[in-house]
Length: 117
Length: 477
Image 1: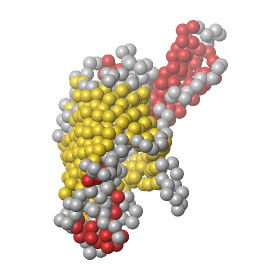
Image 2 (image 1 turned 180 degrees about the horizontal axis):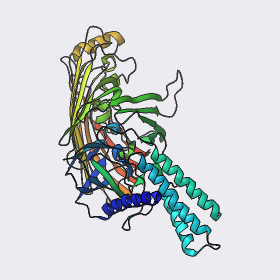
Image 3 (image 1 turned 60 degrees about the vertical axis):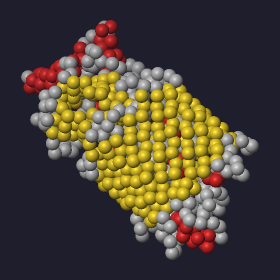
Image 4 (image 1 turned 45 degrees about the vertical axis):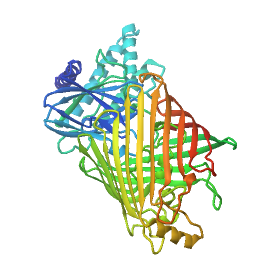
């Protein structure tokens, strides 16, 4: 019985996330990455907003990492497609995203900020 | 809840797999749909771990799946240190990808998350870093074949550069660049160069204020900080950014870097000084860079750069440098001041970039006298050096194509004898200009096959500038 309840909880959580994945995002935000900056580098969201980031590169491949959200994806180089990451702005606060793929001399400083108001 | 949820996931995962195994074992024969389900599970597991290889027999396949699932869940249960405001959330793809998913789509599993954003789904042409084979280093290579009029073709593996980085944490990061030039370094011979081009620690405190210390690249001009071969046209770097502005110019120092909002960012350092002993008429101040060897900070130099990148594909920058350079020339301590402006812009298939730089050297007459007294040769150092270039380029193929062909032409004017101190005449062969025209072909965004022809001219009626033809292959990884 306990196991069944645990399974039900797990499936409910998965179903909720699946629901968010299927839901149309409130906003689609394009972010371009180029040695050694994101554009835009500061993104302000409203609490409760479901947003989708469309990540493209204007040169080599870059990373898009938010440690706190457990996201770390590689943005393909120019002409090789795009990565899409969907977020729910669930709480007020701020979080950094940064490049996780070594891309040159300014790699360490290649980062941006998401602010949820 | 934080402790229970991962346990729930393990228990539930085992339950699902157990039920599935029971159903499979209960059947003497394997129905087609169950085989399909097994193959589907294996396919999804391969999405999680491309190295996953199912064994040949059915029992072993199930065992392998179970073991892999346990391993992945165990990895996810390892708790990362929670930041103050946000709780980590691992990107575990769910058993089923969303129906509309593009290749590589993965649902992010719900876990405890007290942070401002909760990731939901990742899709598109992305690759999770856990799915990639990555080398622990990156780098770039530059292989040239050059020919000057009247000379032979000369192959040269110009640069073999490895870059190493390390993140001690999200806020303390190390970056370095180690270079071998011209293939060979041998003691006592005139050979290539092994050099530490950069090696510094970044302390990321706040977006506008981040200390940096170590061997730093001087943030002057475009190429100093962006010199990966695929990032510029032409086999060789622009003359203005080698003769007027030294590249790759690095010094020991420390300072601040940051992003001050609205697209503006800056770098500002206090560094070791240039050495005026090596200033000369042909290369101006370029030979005076210490590159960290026998450096001196008796009179530290100050360098800063302000950059605007608030509009996509537009970068505007201005750099300033000031420092006394006479630590090795007793009796004279000339101040070198540099001001430069540069910009890059891309619009559809057009690119354009340009740079202007002016350098002032104080006490140039006294410096010439001192160096002539020391060496017996008048270096004819000028009071002012000036250079500029403009480079339009056109992408012959649309940007969405996987291959890229860029045709470009660059006009450069670089004068290391712009203004002479009283009593000194300019050497006209160092009042130079060039047209560099060529093509860059990129079979991959990180690989550049280059060809160019340089029409080089100067004002001298005695010493003629020599045209050059260059082939190059450069790559970044």
